[in-house]
Length: 268
Ligand code: NI
Image 1 (cartoon, rainbow, N blue to C red):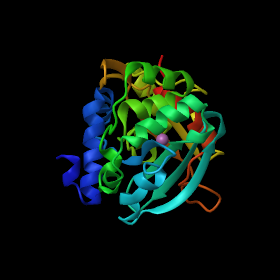
Image 2: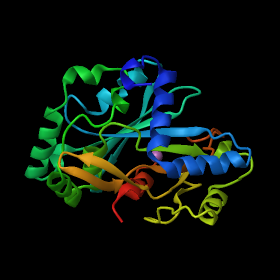
Image 3: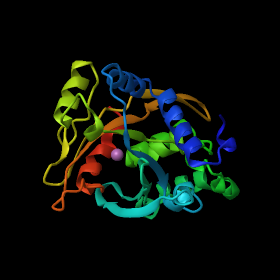
């Protein structure tokens, strides 16, 4: 199904999931590993990335979700990486975590590069229901991509991939054959998957009410204006949520943990 025929949330979420699996053999292998154990994988959240420039900021990517019953829930800032994020929630649906690079906090030449990319976007297309998963709407060459990557791995990821899911996240609480994030990590490593060790294998703690780990993004090939380039693709994340004082599972995110998880798409 092509993105311009998508007009409802089920179709959008399905398209995002298929796009993600198609681009990331590693994610498919991880899913298959769980399903071979009889698990039905529940997605905790989907993460999207963008730049803080109109018409492609967080509000543009959030539009189809807000139009489909999602509510804006939490706001997060990542000062070291010059990012901010908002998470959106809807009952019975995966959460949607949308971050954006704070472009005006970048060096002047980076601001210019990103403004040039965003100027290639037809503003009308940002109102398409599936704009958030429509891929890369701009042309970028190797030299430009390399300059972005020197300053911000995040900026380079968005330049190379455009608008598509950066990661999906397995809700560990919903697994029936594995009781903890630690057990999930052990299983993944025993099956040859490389996990992101920045900040430790597990980011967060039961006291913080959220523990997360992630694979290291697999390398994929993208076609830039002047030829192909191998870049980090997407990663798979794993989240275990813990009950708060009232006994309800915590439903938010922890900025200090996510800060290191962003590094799952850094070049190695
Ligand atoms: Ni995440």
